[in-house]
Length: 180
Image 1 (cartoon, helix red, strand yellow):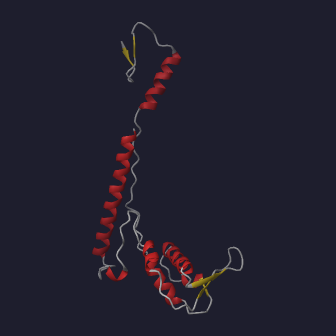
Image 2 (cartoon, rainbow, N blue to C red):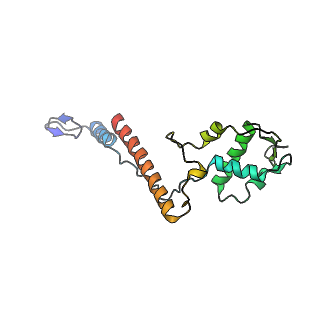
Image 3 (spheres, rainbow, N blue to C red):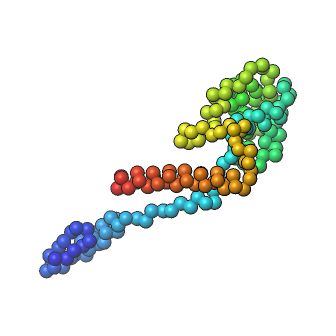
């Protein structure tokens, strides 16, 4: 008996025709497990931007009733992510009726005007922005350790995020194994 490696056997006395051999080779290649790709996330820095923090920054920079360009609101932003978070903060303020937005032409300069409304922000709406993907709430800025910015704190935070990523990747691998 000739074993083809797929649980298929053929009598030794018969020669395999070329199409059957090609089919056996193709089947072996198709059923051989592919190596799982390894994703290295060591180079990815965790995002440390909060919409709640950005709302405070935006409101501090916006005088009441004076149009201010969005470009000036993001001036001094450390990176692109921080600029995006400030944009989300402006959208949240617009949604809550705290600012008005004006853009004269498509892709033109965005003007933000702080309205003279005497009402508080909807804290629940702002808090929705500061939940992690798993639904847990991130600590508010005043609840964060005073050591934020220290190398030890940053390393501990990186380790925590790495552990969460590893757990998520392991869950995905486990799900993939169950489907195979």
